Length: 417
Image (cartoon, rainbow, N blue to C red; front, side):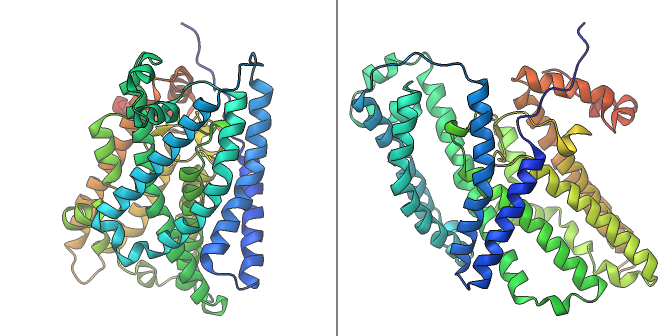
């Protein structure tokens, strides 16, 4: 049997960190210029994505083989553009249809979408023309365009599995349509909190700790927003496949608004046990150590998102990441975030006014951690369709920092699907 090796990662963490720095500087200038938050975020996202796109584009050019030139078919191009706009119309109809997206929480998202729509109107035709010149293959957009033009018979003949192509296409857009507003509105709320909180208020350990947590989560959300926006074949950041299992979707969306509000808040509400834990530590040194440990775990969680660059999105395969925190363990984001929650919840629940809260905290947080375990397993099952991931996971069985634990608890080890 061939010995597993660590595959090459599709992203570069250093390029992503440099891009993040540029994005932060751009947003700082916008803040000084007193631009509206929606414009500040838009410019920050654009600045962040540009160097990563350049890196991805150059890498793709280096790896790609030259393709034979084909005749330019205007009809095919127009079909693709039509398919794209029809897809956008379906997404907007879904937002209008479901009452969730009419709540005040999503008002900042609608401002952002309005600005984004103007940008898309200007750039989409240019993008599709360039892509059609370099890659005139028929895709899901072309198929939708033909179906809308009542040319279904010809369209279906071009694909061996047209229904699979359409399913993957609309599932990919469902992922983006569901997660993008969540990421954006909470990023907007975090930045609003940081704007209103002056740095002079960050002089105590609790306030500085909360501000740092907010900054770290904001970075995570910032990268998440750009990930759901930038699924471009031009830069090799497109979606290769989407998880088609109902179970995979359920355990994932359970962790996000509005489903976590409806389910986790009522049945696994471990947050009630998460008291103002810093106040319970009466020793300054111990407080500093505890806060530093918690922030270190959260930093690992954020780096696990940053390493994706512009490829982050749930329930999708967009290339295998093997560097950054993923060099040391599978699912570093889930591991670090869950340890962070346990560290800041359970030890202090007993000291609360209701001692039984520690038992409830352990029970509820165990349920949440189990959901994340199921998420990890469904992701592994999906990504195992790619032999590169199989090679990575098998390598991690032997060389990951938790390899020793996997040998003692075999259910934690990767098994080929």
